[in-house]
Length: 123
Image 1 (cartoon, rainbow, N blue to C red):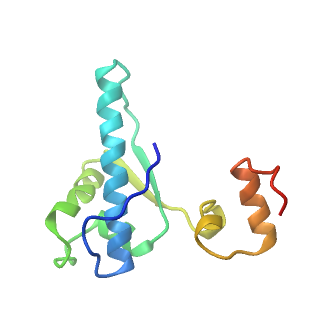
Image 2: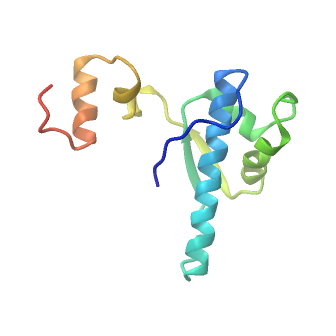
């Protein structure tokens, strides 16, 4: 599922904003997991979330030193500790969405355009 919306809270840092985004992704994934379960398709594998911010991934795995972050955002940490989700790094070379967010070199842009299946567009 895909969607875009303004975050309801004001993050104090980009790491905190990424952490909130991880929570929203986890919430959506858990909703789908429960829906599939009700339909008879039990999901036994871990849910894999990809993140590109080392700080937010670290916070999701261990939130003891992030007291300034609201407690409700720590649900993603609980899911990680319970073994329901796994969050891994997905750094720059694999970020197809970069063409929508920043300037990138032409070869990388062309590759990502092909990944979006927009290759008919002249670049």
